[in-house]
Image 1: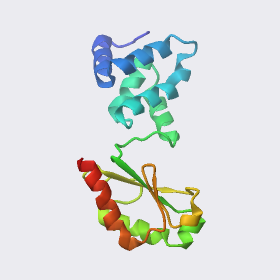
Image 2: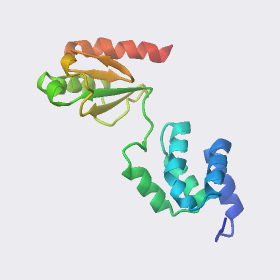
Image 3: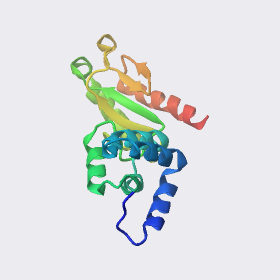
Image 4: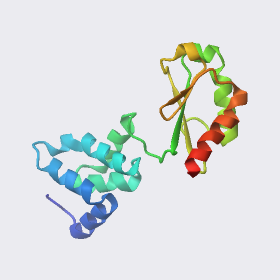
Length: 175
């Protein structure tokens, strides 16, 4: 790798410590391929797979080890919807806001979840258990309104059912 800093060894060691050996090995393999900069998305997928999200320190370490401008790494991570720049909760709550669910009260269900957890769309609860997101359609319109928590579908949900539903997953989180 070409470097232009006097303290490259320190920068490199710090970046390797942040990412860990498996990711560093992956980056080294990617760097050996033709056009290594084209491997950036694959590297970011590996980092997110290991840590659950892409922290600023992860992005900087990737930029250093791949010798890609940090602005490009941050730009790619921010552009693609798949990449998460904040930690997510143990459980992902997706409230379907497609037409059928919306007409049958998805907005009231989402509002109840927001009130119960003290968060809004895209946020994670303070206890780190839940992250709330909206989904355009979960493909279960006959069960509208629908809430999906991780891979489990809950159909015909009412706002009154929300506290018990959240409690069920809180208990799972404690196990």
